[in-house]
Length: 188
Image (cartoon, rainbow, N blue to C red):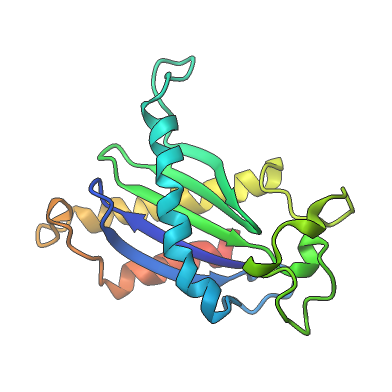
């Protein structure tokens, strides 16, 4: 699987972006996005912000407050988006792009357009074993644990007196990037 993780400010300014692949099931940790998918990913993530705002500002949960982890909130063709909202309205968005064979779309190793963004969701009709399910408890728990680790690193980063998130400063810290990569390797 390939992932794109983005942090957006309250004004929807990208503060941080990181691409990585899965390290589970023999993965090497390298993102396998095509050039066209890589160019489309920011647009997919920004289009999910409407749903994030609906959930965020909609009716509150039964406990009286909205949750920080919004789980799987959107999908676009073969891409699934999960979200975490901080108390300062900074949004963490994770775009997940499963491999074609995990989606049940064919061999996938030879590539081609089948199963890519151009291929659509045509092959997702059945409930074949091994098909990626973003709402399964194991997947949601892994994504939540990833977000929790990144949130802890985020809080430590914004506590730096030289970093002003309100001004739209971009996170350039190699330590923060390494912590995001470590959380991804650990959980995703």
